[in-house]
Length: 125
Image (cartoon, rainbow, N blue to C red; front, side, top):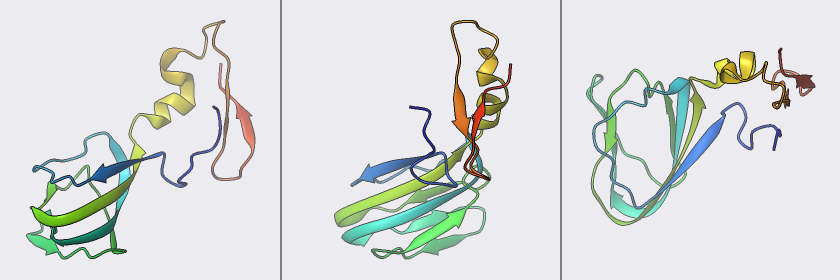
């Protein structure tokens, strides 16, 4: 708890095992996401609707894009496919600033590691 993220500069990640996604946007991502594919499959291309692009994603390939702003999905595939999605959380800024409104609660105290310099900082009050 209260440790720096395992995947800096991203605040979290998702592991998709053999998942075909539907057309969507990640409305809670703050800036960028990175999708890394680990696969032994055919198909599974990543599509970005607004740009009209289809990316052939082989094992080890990755792409960085604004998943909040672009509607995307991946196509059906045959075989095994894992995608690691590293993302930034839109609400993380609110958490850092005032712990989503809980920072003044006497039963709640915390600190966090500032990712820009690695120093531990007390939560604002």
